[in-house]
Length: 392
Image 1 (cartoon, rainbow, N blue to C red):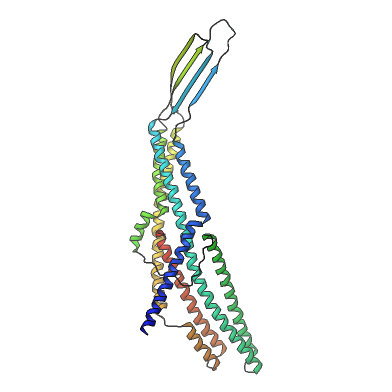
Image 2: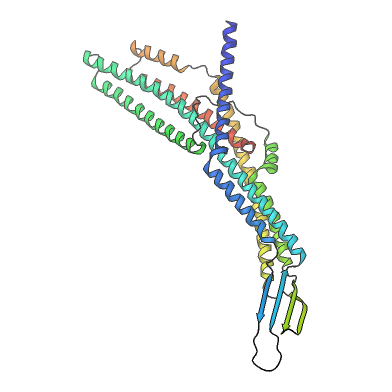
């Protein structure tokens, strides 16, 4: 007896470990094969390169002028000019910092998209397990309703039941068969969605994975503040807006041009010289500075709003988690075995201890409890997945 118990515990542990591994394989497949995630990676790479290409020197300018003169006077026959323009040095430093922070934003946004897709895949797995359990429960209920309908058809022929009872048993069968068909269609749709996300990774689990540990609320809020990609993107965006403000202020400083100038007048005369110039940004830059200030204020407000929303969302999830934990514990404490209870109800109907109305009421109550148990366990795992999304 003791060996049988130990073997059963090992089998249950292996089944739960397999469920955990199956979900992880799904997440690995999403990270490797998901087309949306691959597109997001390519877009982040392109945007990062674009941000880094805007801080180089302008292209040098080369100009040559050839003159022709028909008069007797000696004139300049040709001029060659080579010039290079550049901004005030601090502008390059400001632009470089702004570009680096933009690249950080794109990286964090990519991580946020990755986390979003992995959470979506994980919740799909949980819903699929719940739907499979619901389908199995409804299949059992349909089989039982079919047996009752056949029994009342036989009773009607034997004169032991009336048409109303026969019709009621048929209606019950049609109703639960419709529920089963709806659940099967919902399950098929969820499997198609998961297949599209993973690129074909199979998922055949019928057991929920082990419940993940959940750290205290304040600790999780601190974890999100430090690691959440969406918040990190806003942090970098705020710093980037400040860098852009410095860059726009640097635009008020002059830019310079240096170069070489060469002239020749026939074979006798050659002139070499240096070109130096300065551009003064007298018009319009103040509007760029005002725009940059407004954008910096906007990004700070976005960050502040996101932090408040994040705390509120986590608080809501934790409140839901506590309620679902208690409810799930209550359901697990119940010692109802659906198959055994259904057998007793069927025996009572066959023995005449229950009429059809009482029988259907008992059956509805029993299956409703089982469906609610599945729904509570599903919602519990979905809530835990939402809380621990930062760990994906």
